Length: 423
Ligand code: UGA
Image (cartoon, rainbow, N blue to C red):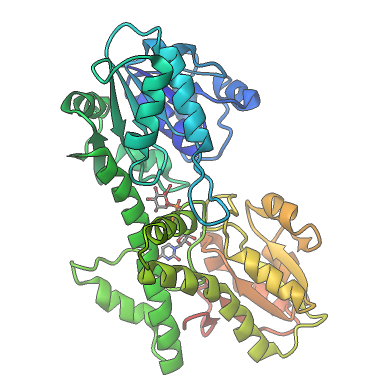
């Protein structure tokens, strides 16, 4: 099939590349000409495991990128994958969605056959039906007999997005008509995964609910972890026993410094703000965010309790990315931690295998080191903030510290008797 993907960010690029890998003819449209140039020259603008190999195989053949929307009229499916950044009140900003919908609509004026416009971006329930559909129909001058609408959310984890795309737990296809839903299902005919057909609004809600539920599992584990620490019980032993219940599952029960990234904090805030806008009080969702905001500051308090005043002390932060295997620091738990350390007058040295460059833009004043040893030398305290597997091998490096106070925000060290945020 012919597909135009609007938005070459991590969702659009990974989806476009994977659709091309499974044999479709894909055009990725992006306003950023340097990104377009990189995709066409087989260089992924982001790091995702396996992506470069797919670009090498498909770019210049059945995958291309462009700054123009020319491919839309001829595409069976045009898929919107642009960003929905968080507004000041926590709600999702739909400006890019609107722009994409009207540009697609303008091009669809010229189309001859039946076309489907699908939304893949995470959007508030009702957006496809009440916002994208009228905008595309208005700009194209066509009717619902000519254009079908669908909402097909993604569940890709950063870092292993290609694997997730190719091995989905489920493929959610929300559509306004059966015909549109069948066309979207056909896009995935080479991929194994259960397909569930819903209304577009339910598909939009499935995405928010999945992320909100996973975030809730993490905040729940963190709250239980804080209680376990006070009781002197190991929360990891507890959650192992709890996760063996098939109704609960062992995933996303790792207590620690909380969730970060571009999705969980934004999506939980968005769904809470939608609820409040309708006069509801989303008590649980607000608590999930509240626990998550408080969690990183707990680790600084634990450090202060052990090391005393942090003024003029050297404190090492190991891990800056919001999780391992990425250079992404969006809503990383180390950001508020570094802020709190600096406000207490500490000198901060940091090490991260990938994310130092990104963090430098937020905190140019701290010291960025090329190895854990450099960061730990003469340090008065160390906070481990990201679950990088390489940290599990650290041992004698800690003996370089002036005072060996090490507190883990992620359960990753293998050295004995390290205090953790919840253990
Ligand atoms: C998340 C979801 O897992 C994807 O399914 C979804 O598609 C994506 O958001 C999105 O909406 O686009 P991602 O943000 O890449 O994916 O990150 P995760 O691997 O889910 O981790 C999120 C955060 O939770 C990280 O900061 C991680 O350290 C933390 N986490 C995860 C915990 O604190 N405890 C856990 O048990 C698991």
